[in-house]
Amino acid sequence: MSESSENTAEQAAAFQKIWLDSISKLLNTAFTFGGDSPPPEILREIRSGVFSALAKSWEEFMRSPQFLDSMKQWMDNAIAFRKMSNDFMATARNEMQATSRDDVDTVMLAVRHMEKRLLDRVEELSTQIHELQRGAPRPAVQPKARATTPVKRASNNGRKSSRKNP
Image 1 (cartoon, rainbow, N blue to C red):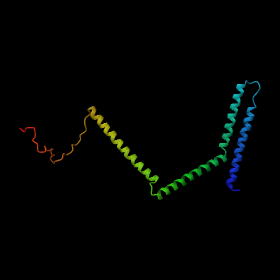
Image 2 (image 1 turned 30 degrees about the horizontal axis):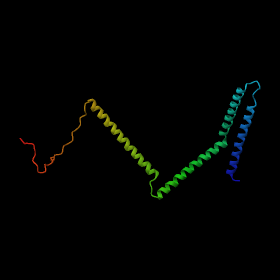
Image 3 (image 1 turned 90 degrees about the horizontal axis):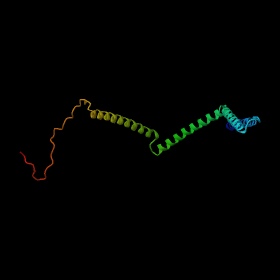
Image 4 (image 1 turned 90 degrees about the vertical axis):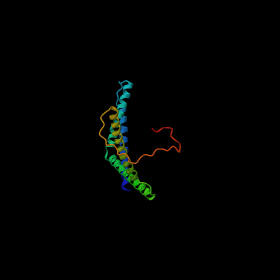
């Protein structure tokens, strides 16, 4: 027999022992009441005995080295499977010349940074507009230089203007 199957058999035996202990504790608790108690009180005692026996047995089971070892092994296998599947999918995307998860994450991060900068700038502009509406003194802003080329006016298509020049 291999070591893993022996380990599994030991774990199953430990689990079976815990269940048998739980059931025996339950049966002992169920029949420890006296005959002078009214029936509803007896049921409460049975219920509380059952719950306490289950709590103790499950706490023993979950704190047992066999359970902790099996959970550690299960988590290690789950992590290894996740890593292997991620590597496989990355290789498949690379072979198909598709975008990888890292590429998408990088683009998403760049978009988030750009969005943050835009929102900060919109907030600044909103604050400036509110200050202008309240009549707060305007900061000194340099006027933009105007173009030096004359602006062409629309022609009348050969018609005379109805306006008279003085």
